[in-house]
Image (cartoon, rainbow, N blue to C red):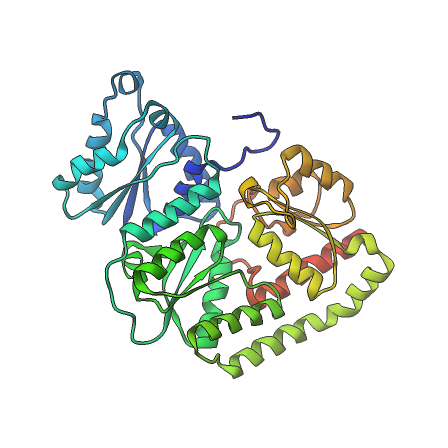
Length: 411
């Protein structure tokens, strides 16, 4: 693991932990040093993850490592089942058990007959060689493979959201806005919001949904598996802006063969346009008279960067500046991956642009922290009821913070 001036990139283990942490009626045992879980718990508290999975760490000592003794883990499983009565126990290795080759799947197979009412589900990626988004991807996929029951489709059309996880900034608000739109446009309710607003029972019933809405690319393998297992179609993408949200709704409509509620769509579109209308002359003035301040610079998750950039450029007519993603495996010609040295240089060279990045990057550069779109965060988020970035309401929110940031530079 290299040296970093800022927080190091999320590891696969942390991606798995943050994906599982929001699932109710479950427990998670990390087989490793207790300090790891304490650090993870602090992040989750700050991100307003307070009523989800029960999180535990066994701790390990020299004898456990040198002798390969897993008795501490086995006792912890028994104690937690007795205390919490979870429906599922997730087992997560930390770096040391991964390095010494502790076989968690074998331990689960051996212990499972003792606890027939509780599923013991082991996860991998405890080392530092796997990035965080890969951990998210594999965690989502394993949940979809192991938890859903064979089940019929619901009588009325329903949906799942795949990829709303605690590692994404403002994940609560974005998922709720999409859920609000689905209810208004199609009168559909969710079966499972995977994984930010869910429990084991909802995960068991995922196969009953009529469509899967995959809001980050890490969720596509999960959607493909559910399509193969249950025949559930899926769409990819996050709805940003008015036109982007209408396009998202239209794709859902075509996939399901269901016409959206025209009255709801027209109301939401008209309301958003009315609320944005007063800003249009000011944006035109900024673009014409202060072109450097109408440039938008973005860094974060590739899907978030792509969606917000398209809205800013295609609907508000801001100018595209430098953009980058925070994961090398997601990089392509349109959105490159930048190292810490590279993105700090980009930020220094774009002092007048509208900068949207992690809270840490914005604080370091002395920029407007209201423009945060990714983690690492620098604030506590006790309230999950913040304005979204997605959907109709997200379109208004984004314009609000862009406009005020640009005007503050004029002053």
